[in-house]
Amino acid sequence: MATGIVTNARLTHATPAALYAHAPNRYWEDDSKVPVESRRTCKDIARQLIEDSPGKDINVILGGGRRHWEREGRRLDGRNLVDDWLRDKRRRGLLAHYVETAEELSQLNTRHLDYLLVVKLAVPERKAVATPKLKRGGLGGNSPPTTGGIFAPSHMSFELDRKLSPGDEPSLSEMVTTAIRLLRRNSRGFLLVVEGGRIDHASHYNNAYRVLDETLSLESAVLVALSEVDAAETLVVVTSDHSNMLTLGGLSTTRGNAIFGYDSVMSDVDGRPYSTLQFANGPKFSPGRVSARNSAVPLKWATHGGEDVPVFTRGPMADLLFTGTFDQSYIPHAIAFAACLGEHKKRCSVHAKNYTLLDC
View 1 (cartoon, helix red, strand yellow):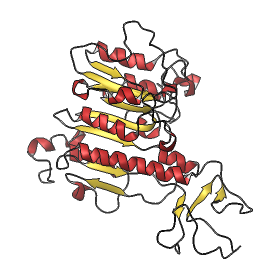
View 2 (spheres, one colour; view 1 turned 135 degrees about the vertical axis):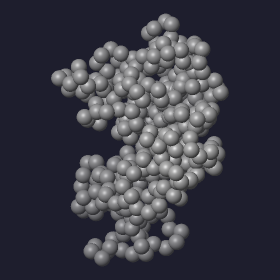
View 3 (cartoon, rainbow, N blue to C red; view 1 turned 90 degrees about the vertical axis):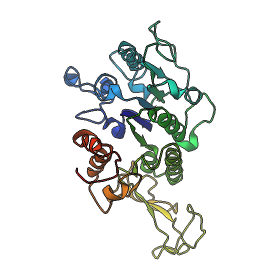
View 4 (cartoon, one colour; view 1 turned 90 degrees about the horizontal axis):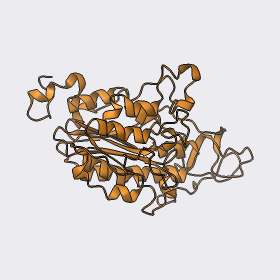
């Protein structure tokens, strides 16, 4: 089975890192963050992605966070992990490809790729790699290439701020399109995890406009994914790891009122207007009510919420496995069951069609 990660956050950030790394601290993204006394025994998260299983065998790796990969960033060991990733694929006789701009991503021929790395740069002017035998594009070999890319020093841009020139960042949808077209070539299927990570970051800033805009960006990525896969053969799961502090008030707001506008009813306390969208805590608190869009509790950085989050699914076994209320930890087990992974591997050898719970 082919595998892939697509995120507009850092590739070493919490959600993508959970797919391939084990670390005592989520912030150990490079060796500079690992305590000195632990560096001999604990690999940083970026190293685990390129050196250990399952990270080194992930076919598509697209996202941000280049500062954790190179000596010009935050690494103290002098290594360039992009070069090391390419060397590993060459040593194993694989064809690997690394790209760093939207234009390079769009020009890839996914029919001749097995591995892809993309790690976003803020300014697309990466110097040639130090090792003369390594080319900036691909590596020679007898197997189809691997592709990847890192598109930014840290997280990729908010969609609203993303430059649209070919030499800059691709959109989340563009990355998803490339990833699926590469992965679906595998006759044994694929597992792709896509994260719209910037929704959370906009929420921490209490930036309502970018929260909604990033949600639309994720929706576009989901629609692209649905258009690229066989609905009868592909289970699609869309969920969130948590909620945030954005709330929808304005129960009396009339239909058609701007979502960034105000409720039609004034406050019972001071008789002043309040916004339809509000924040339970975080920045923009003002005791003097200088703004109608205040947070209720002053914090520099808004927190996560604790309520249940929805899970939307489509495809084989979606209505059987994802019904009612369940713990988040159930979700990967359900996906593994549907995909016949791990302890459920033998199930697919029993049934020609993977649509039944019988004989499990």
